[in-house]
Image 1 (cartoon, rainbow, N blue to C red):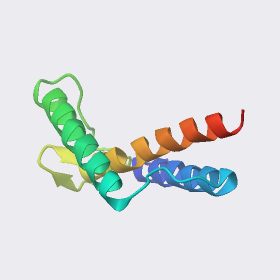
Image 2: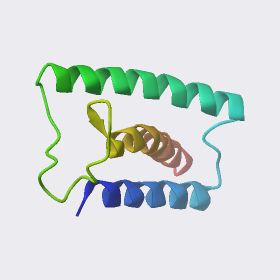
Image 3: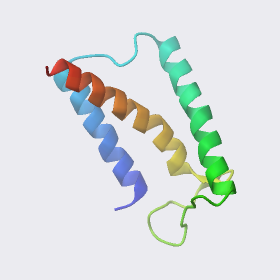
Length: 99
């Protein structure tokens, strides 16, 4: 299974949980944009530094990545930075709702 497929599955789980428990993650578009921008900036800086300093790397030879890069990161990593925080917030709110 490739990275993008896993991200789509995580997104579908998030949407399902939000639908099932009937809640909103963000109160306004301003809050959504600010949160996403902060997480995107921190994520890009973190990942870029880790790749640059050879702490980790992305293997483009297999079928796991699309091969599309922005800077030194694959496009899937940017998508991850949008989807993963949404997933974490959704699971957190779902667990709090189910109590």
